[in-house]
Image (cartoon, rainbow over all chains, first blue to last red; front, side, top):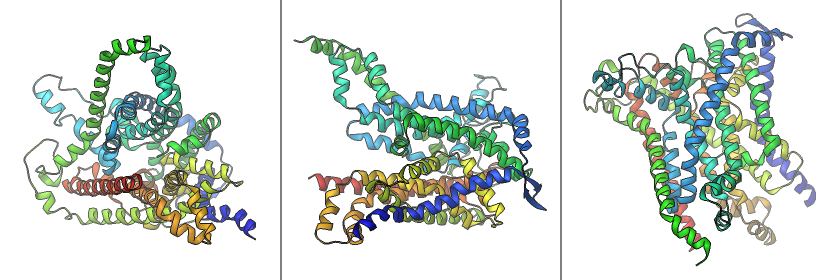
Length: 286
Length: 278
């Protein structure tokens, strides 16, 4: 009897979340695919059909936005990594007793809601704002200078918003490194640069990849930075999906584009899981 | 003197300088992350002509603070956000704790599948999660509103709750609840009297994170909200026509409250840890 209950216990314990995630995470992905293949309009309703042409149409029409999203996503993720790594390294190796305080300071901006953080940057970078405005009236930069509406503003916004998401997994990975290994490298006459690139960086690889995945996926799918900080030339696939749902009410197209985005990113995640396993992301996700 | 020591001796000043530079750089990055927050707080005290935040400093005023709750829709949206934040955090803890328990204490068949789903839920881009939930609600003809927002927020908070609570459980000494079992406690009693107090910091942490994620979310909410507005949605809608200063004021309140809560939580944890160690 006891053995039997032990056998069933894990299933009983996981049942509530499984049921929830099945109904509100896994099944919706299926309904999205269904909607992508549907024909009809919002007024008369939709009929599920085998409208696969939507996919080729979606790609030929919007491949520029797909390419742009993946481009902005990769550039912003790499820049974030370059900015975040030294910070995570310094906190992990030289943070001393104040480690948790430094980490806390890095996540503090999260207590201000995402859209307001982006809005604040719009404010700071605006053409006549308190940064560019005085510089222009002093004649230090030409009147026509603008940062907003450029791809750099969008990428900058993405970088800013992912910084803490990247520092955390990097910090966790660096913190785990056995300091004796680092000292051993020094004793074996490795220069600090060699120790860093041949010992510390490889040992922190799980953090580098976990953070890369989280930040990259988030940034590829983002539309808020592009919407607030960018212009018509910085449209990302998220903006198109958003507009298709709510401006043009072309639900099948919107569902089709997000299905395509999902497939592309799932491919990336699958490759990741294949190479690094799923446990690492669990360790580094928070 | 050994060669290694000698090398260490000659290299130290250079290393020391590098370390200082690294510290200085890290300080700059931390300041950079604070810039938008400082701007927001400072400009909440700025004179706002026509009820919109001005781009330049026009002078100090407490007007926006006096009328902090003066915009009814905005206050209503904030209340919605708080309700969804607390509700989704609570539900995801209730759902997530048993799963975290199953994942840390048992070996079972569906474990890998569960890991993958949790992982996918965390890694899935918000646009896809939002669009797929909206597809489901459209197909089932479920009217969008506060309930669908709550449902969607639980859907992403569950995974985070599992990960945070699980991290806390992994560090637990299993002999404690075995001892409870040896002393005749049923698993139910052992959980509530032994395990639960030990994982409580993890549960509180998961709750705080869930609340923060919920109040932060714009993208998923935007898809499933229908005509209902949350605080971020209201702000996003107003951004096109100009931001009223009350947005900055209320956000400053949330920032202050959230920061204070996090500080209190970490102080309590630190004291508890010191008591355990000493």
